[in-house]
Structures are given as C-alpha cells and as structure tokens.
Amino acid sequence: MKIVAAEVFVTSPSRNFVTLKITTDEGITGIGDATLNGRELAVAAYLKEHVAQLLIGKDPHMIEDTWQFLYRSSYWR
Image (cartoon, rainbow, N blue to C red; front, side, top):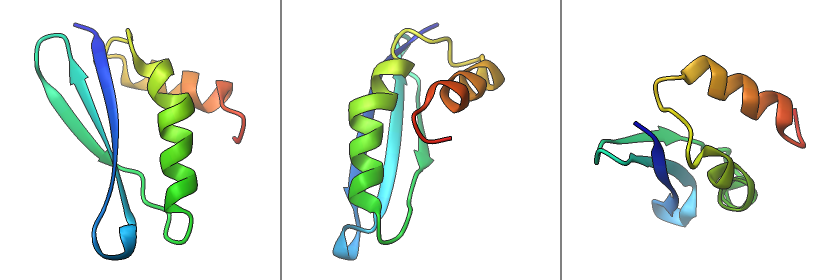
C-alpha cells in the first residue's frame, strides 16, 4: 500500500482549521489536524508545497519512519 494523494483543507469560521487528508492506492483515507491558530495559511502552504510531495509514494504503515523523515528533512525542525 502506498500514499497517492495528500490534500490540505483550510476551513471553519475565519479559516482557522487546517486539515491534511491522506489517500492510499487502496482507497483508504485518513485525516489529521495541523491547526496553528493565527498562522493557518503558513501551515497550509507548508503542507501543500513541501510535505504533501514528500508523502506521495510512502507506505502509510511506516508511521515512525515517516515521522522521522519529515522531522529530520524539514526546513523548520
């Protein structure tokens, strides 16, 4: 199983909730909250422009591996 899509949604009153939706090649989806009040557009841009591209092709079962990869390879640690 591989991740094939990562979508970012900015919702709610005053656009203050950021949600990341992951979809696998088997049609399984998962969502996660990435909200940082007051900086939601910066978080959404970071997810769309950097993180989403890094997730495509990853095995969704490898949670710790993905966490370490994103933590160690990101610009802001």
